[in-house]
Length: 45
Image 1 (tube, one colour):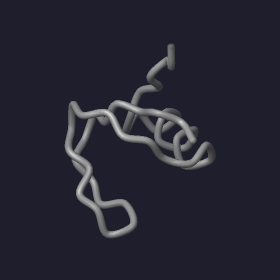
Image 2 (cartoon, one colour):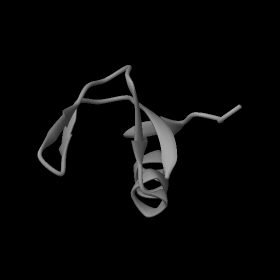
Image 3 (cartoon, helix red, strand yellow):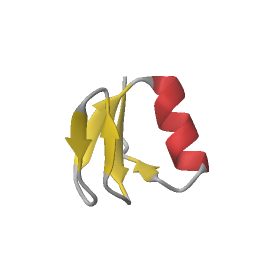
Image 4 (cartoon, helix red, strand yellow):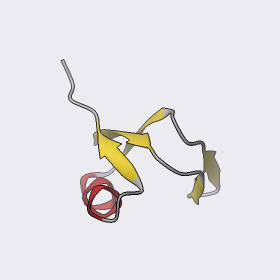
């Protein structure tokens, strides 16, 4: 699982993901969203 900060509002598996908030999604989805500028990766500490 990868944490991402959303740049846009979208639906994901029936859940509303809001822009500016951090969510945890699977790795492949996170990579697709980062490449398409829908989200930014959040570094886990």
